[in-house]
Structures are given as C-alpha cells and as structure tokens.
Amino acid sequence: MKILNLTQHAATSGQKEMGVIDFAESDRALLVHALTFDELPDESTMFARANSIAMMAAGHSSGARSAMIGGAPYFMRPLERALWAVNIRPLYAFSIRESVERIRADGSIEKINVFRHVGFVGTEFAEYSA
Image 1: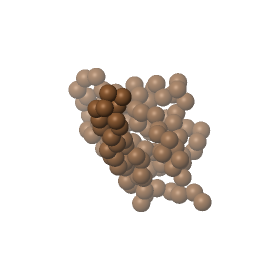
Image 2: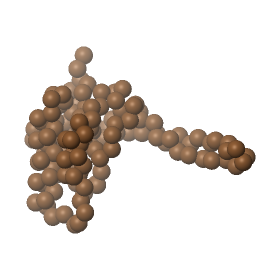
Image 3: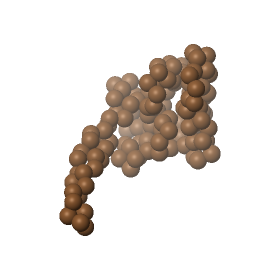
Image 4: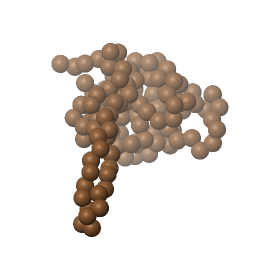
C-alpha cells in the first residue's frame, strides 16, 4: 500500500517500511505552510487549506490512494472531508511508546521515550495493493 505523508514531520523508517511516501522538499514546504496556523482560523480558511492539501495529494506522482494525516485536531475533520472528496483515504499513525534507560558516563541514568510505529488507524477503508 502506498501512503502519502500529509503531516508536518518526515516519515520515520518504520512508516516508510509500511509504504509511507514523503513529498519532495519543495512541495513539503508548501504542505507544512498549509498545515501551520499562526492565528485563529475561521471555517473558510480551514476548508481552503484542506482542499489545497487534498489537491496536492491527488496530483502526487506516487498515485497513492491513502494518506497519513495528523496535527491540529480542529483541522483533521476538514482535511479528512477534503481527502475523501478526491478519493484518498485518511489514516492515522499508531505508535507504541517504549521507555529506554541508558547509563551515562557519570553513573546517572537517562530515561528516554522511543515511539515505535506499529500501524495505522483507519486501514479498514484503505486500498491494499498485492
């Protein structure tokens, strides 16, 4: 399955292994700009940006029919609707947080959280390619 990355972050290696495709850097800048709200958005602004992102996705050379989305919760509904309108299925990444402890040179312990990608929520609507 090909899954277009429509988030502000580059896909992780685990996501890429599951078919996630990033935009080229020049297009990625346009995507990030459309996903970033620096002031309180009104409904028309959100719909215009969602439609712009959906058109970028529909015209992407990969031909992906699914897209990984995520970000501002208030924007996900308009983005989902815009993607469905161009026959692209929205998916959400699912990760598991794993705690890792490392002993530092001074003997102290550093604890970090590592997020491991495990799959997608929404795949019941996705098209799989054999």
